[in-house]
Length: 113
Length: 111
Image 1 (cartoon, rainbow over the protein chains, first blue to last red):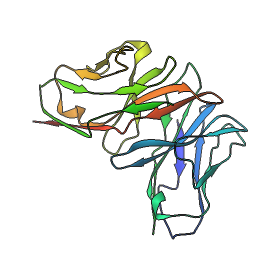
Image 2: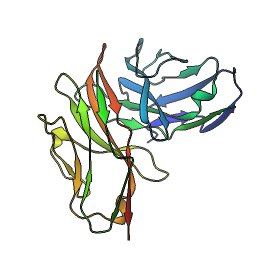
Image 3: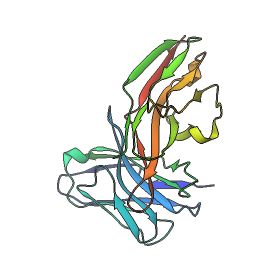
Image 4: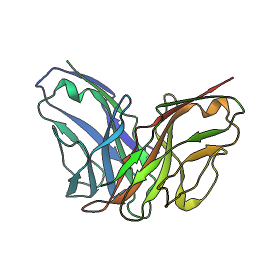
């Protein structure tokens, strides 16, 4: 029972580099989310998607992009990495309105130097 | 705008003492409120939600719409309750409900 799977678990990027954080879920959930977790700041919503082809910005979308071409996958793209993007990133999914228990991945710890 | 406020970053109590983790929210409609917990080296997971009106691991939370609060309570803390606790709100976004979290409270239960 895989649930929500994120890759990689750890990554170090240089300033200006780009990368994609992968997230996939096998529960056929419509909704998927990306959060970043900073010490003392809690979880901030970056982007979310309510289904394939539909995405929307959260609280802190600047510097990130997402796509949702399939129900299973919701990758998060960093185009020009900056030190301010050093954080732990969590992907989550749920079935949607009325079924709002969210299931989380194990997180990706990203350091930008 | 949806906002969740958890005023305490750290709450430290002794084993057997009562616990109350505070959560206040801001939302113009009728929100769904949740408490999530993250134990050390584990994934974030749902603890309880207001619509279920249940008690999980001895924890309860009551939605108070007048005070816009959803405080988490337990009468007698256990050491295994030590974790990070997040209050969360699900409310309408442009395309559907979105789930937003507070800053979290670390609960430390001392023996």
